[in-house]
Image (cartoon, rainbow, N blue to C red):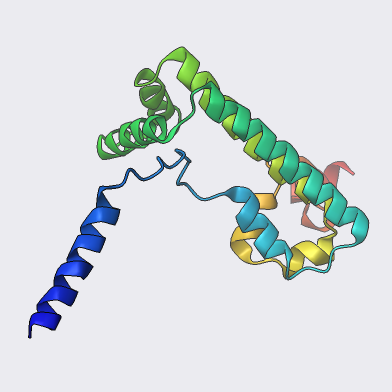
Length: 181
């Protein structure tokens, strides 16, 4: 019995001694999902040529370098939480689109808003550069959510609307239009 107590006491002392040591402080890193990891994982299912692989690696390297510089400039987890909270409050207030964005931008300083804008631009550039490399067949094999991310969106793009007259074919002309021919 004494041996059991002695062994338990020794184990307890060892655990408490190691717990008291100062652990190395972990480097603060962003906990959000890494878009390069998600996209490259999805691209593994697609057979890329060596040129395509080089282009994707160059794009991801550029993105990661940009994000590293933004983190050094002050884009951190605390700032991301602040922005997320502002977005949550704006959604709860029923705001959408431009109104929501304006409300979120009110909650951050101009410098912080610039950091977010640069991060979004870097992410957009990454997606566009990868989308340019892929063929239509390769894009078709990707999962739907990745395909939507890689779709090159044009800001404020409006469909080309034609007047009703121009869309009618000769067979669909009204009787008055046929009489004038």
